[in-house]
Image 1 (cartoon, one colour):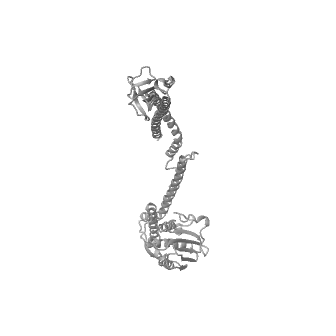
Image 2 (cartoon, helix red, strand yellow):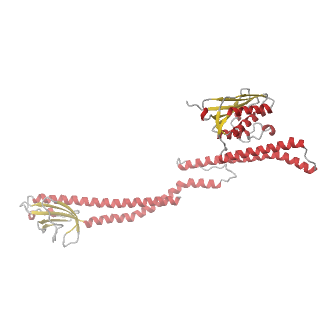
Image 3 (tube, helix red, strand yellow):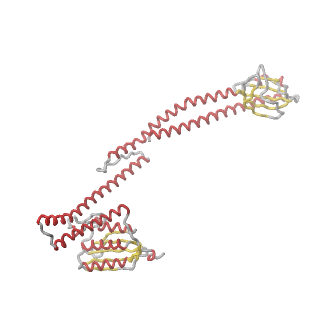
Length: 451
């Protein structure tokens, strides 16, 4: 990158110098020609004014003195013959005869027998005796061209030095400017996937490089967090799967060692519950993995949410012995009935683990959305812990037996499913002193009246 920037900058400098050199030479040439034209015109008009009172032969000799700008002064008659000249041996004129009153500027004019070219001002006029003559004053173009070529040669000699110096300076300063980037590259190369705690140096340059370093560190922080979450997820998943597998393997190993079959009661009380638990855990892990990869798959349709809530209440009344209260309102949402049923099952199962006597499921609706809450009269969720209860493998009481506490994935699945339905989840204190878990969903268009 350093070399490419240097080449690019040098190329731009070359183009700029070439353009500047060409413009300078052209401007200089134009300035010299304008200066010559002004001097020639002034001298010619001075002679024209003198001819109004004198004959050409009687003009003051000083009018025909040349200087650094004016190189030739001549007066021609109507036939083109030179009748007065600043040259000792005059030749021909610098152009054809002109009518009195005409004035022209001639470029590249030559006066025989010399081959020298002049930039001349020619004016047609009349003498005191009404004789038609032409006054011509010229500047040798050789001097102008020599000066222009000298400047061009100086540019050709100096510009390469300037280009080389600019290339060297650009290479040096680009290297200094990119040195923080090189430090960032080296540090990133040293960071391994085994340890993402390292951070790149942040230069105090207040420019894009500082922004790049801060962005890189923010990315490393996210990667470190994702890696930590992944490792914790894998570790927790392995631990959760190991528990039922250990129970099942222990019983099978015991049967193998004793050569005695496993009785039906053991199958019903130990093997089937552990196998069921492992199957549910694998299904939960698969659901979360799919959600991480491409989002929670949904089969959307209009869903009578009140019917799902009532069914969840009926299931609780049929499978538990505590007081279940259900309060529903008519509400239709656009979603996946199977996934929403799973949400209600996970929330009610979670509440049933901690309820003492009463579990309440209520629905409230507004003009745009509906809220379903599941409350219990258990110990509740400490306010400091409410921000992480929907994370994966989170148990607020690590000492709780897993058969009571669950796998720690139920609420995480609730959060994923509700997010896929464009809803929100939360937890706070319930009316009976325990926890109140709730989710909010937008109503289907038919149930969402226009304002």
